[in-house]
Length: 191
Image (cartoon, rainbow, N blue to C red):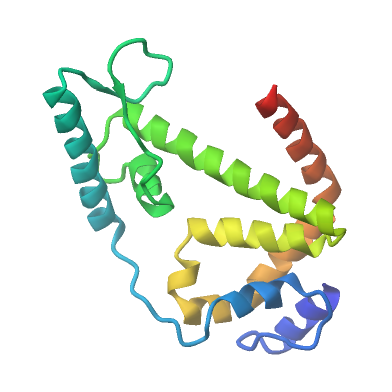
């Protein structure tokens, strides 16, 4: 890992190569260098997902029910957030344009937290099964990059290699503590 940090400090715009078991290189290999897609503006994402939630509310009303966001409620139809992508859930949770209720924002945050927890636990399991700690690092990089615009902006991702490596080094240094917390969280989640 230290080799990767040193290499990116020397050439911050070029991803180093030839480093054995490099999780950052494995992550960068997943996204082609020429992949340039435009990320929709978060306001447009919010408007789109608002329409989706409104459609769910209309369908619930047509069935004589209220659309609810709290799974603990005894009445109403629970909103289905499972088909909503992470960026849209983030738009709901952040509620920058004030389009969503507190209940909608909270439910979106809970769904995102659940997905992230499941993703990180899957990476931990893969790391433990394979005996390769870089699998956890790669899984964490994938999880957190899915939360951001990183996949959509290849150039920004390439110039951010040094920052990612520093972050990766910090992740590796805290691996034992974080892994223990994840195991405790998993045990609490399962029970």
